[in-house]
Image 1 (tube, rainbow, N blue to C red):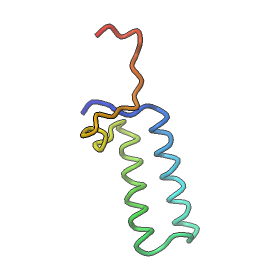
Image 2: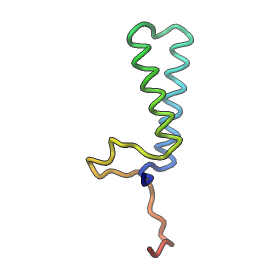
Image 3: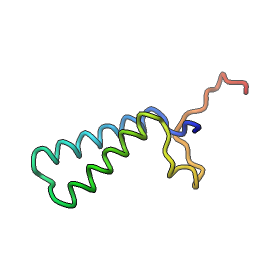
Image 4: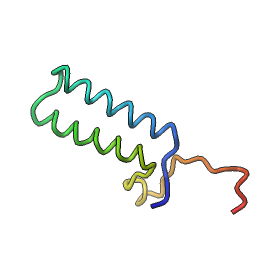
Length: 72
């Protein structure tokens, strides 16, 4: 699994997950919407922690910056 997420992408995902969880615990979202949103939040946290997004692969996307000093 090759990393394809930069630090800004990772931080944004974790912040969005925190917002979703906050909305759930304050009762702003509930029911099916809450369950789907919490599942999405869990995926955001997981992909943010491992720096890999499987949805980026088919499109060849990467938000990871290339190291200019890397000669490989």
